[in-house]
Image (cartoon, rainbow, N blue to C red; front, side):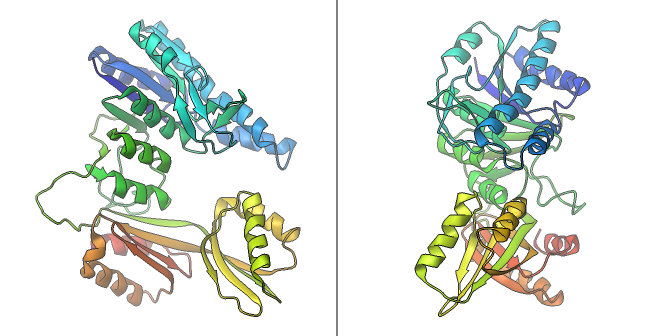
Length: 397
């Protein structure tokens, strides 16, 4: 008997009507003779609401207490789904992250799974129960609740699939797969049948909100095929798996283009420079969980550095500028980064030529250009319109 893991995102379990759709999908797969483990996210925008409410009580709530609070969202989803499945005649049991044996490190808000004790899950599967696990959460060595970061339910699902040696891990959401670019920005975007783990990881790391990047790493490590599908239709999805053979011996096709506008470009100056001051600045950013990327140090006698941060930490950064870093002369602006993804594309110069044709036609200025085996990533000095993305898509795909 095969074991499969199904994960349903927040939009899939947003209300009782949608929970019924989810339940019917679970029942269909269960009736095919599968052992079924289901991982659920919090309903709709519950996590955002809980964060907002916490910040009404404190500007900087404790990470530990925030984890305790946020973990309740998934618990509501799992219990409601179990109640519904029981009413429909299917034995089910809901388990929190810690009841399911998910052990993490001690990092609150962005914990990593260290091990999974499958004892309870396997006991319930042997009774032919449908096991429903709260995603996004676990427990550390101090028996404190931890959460895995936004999108962490994907990682919960793939990690459980890996531990159970499941046949497949299905990630259900309100989109029916991975597209050549964001279909909300480019209407002619095409759905992809397959992607390699490497390609999908590049797409996720560049900001496409399709899968949690850590779940792809787990899938790749344990060779678990990840299938992304829509909860609300039966169309084929996209399968993420090991590199597969195709008709061409060397395929350098562009698979996907990601435009990320959630990037802040920062320039910080100070009248003197020393390595100690540079290190202190970097450590100050890290102390507030602000990860600086694309760091360029143009300093000589005075400090002059450039880096990027994600826009979702801009408030934290602004707070530092008003306090710990107020002696720096700082400017920042919103920019875009575009990544062209496809295995082997660095070896096809025609792809770069086409990219630069569009850059020249639109008088775009490049800040940084990075090329590796599976990606060409360009950071621009300005925020790009979706029209540029459409031009790239038309030319390259």
